[in-house]
Image (tube, rainbow, N blue to C red):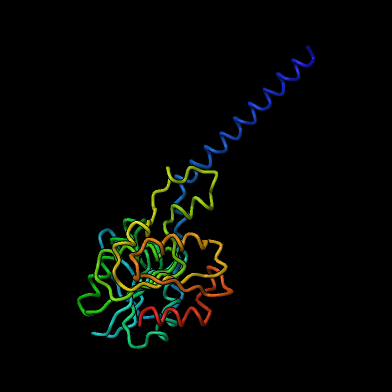
Length: 262
């Protein structure tokens, strides 16, 4: 009898523990569903006093940091999820002095209005492309981190001369699965940025620039994206001794970026 009582007590304890874990799991799922966009997008103010234009789009107006070069080849830049792209303008102006530059501040970033989402970012990228196309017959794209998903889709839909993807992924969905393996991410995620699904439709010469020690976008994610391009379209450059956030300071990165858009 004592043994039976012990077994019943143990069983009850295990059931309570299982119920507690289930509640924690459900709470995590609920939080992810409610807060995933605030986890994905981290709007930044504009910190650099650089030239900019205002681009009206459906439901918002966008700040676009610019280097004006009427009639010159144009570079469209789409930054990371916590990037003030005005801070990237001086470096890009130095690397591409003969190009016009257009750096889009996502909705909610800088002086742009509205709320960021995948459909909005893709629509805004198309609007910027159409705006730039009026003055610039040749357009090249740079997408960094989150922006690689924006640039890849735009390149799959519009005619571009060159494409550079910095610390790119196959999909945000797969990145999130790696970082949150205990959650049913594939059921819950809204903004997937599935670059792998559109890579086969990209014909522009493409360079994938990866960081050797990137722990946010792991090498497998970039490799899986590279494998989805048509043969001969994409090549990968790995910048040594850097991580996700400091890749832009390495001279190998700068040389690779210039070569990618040459």
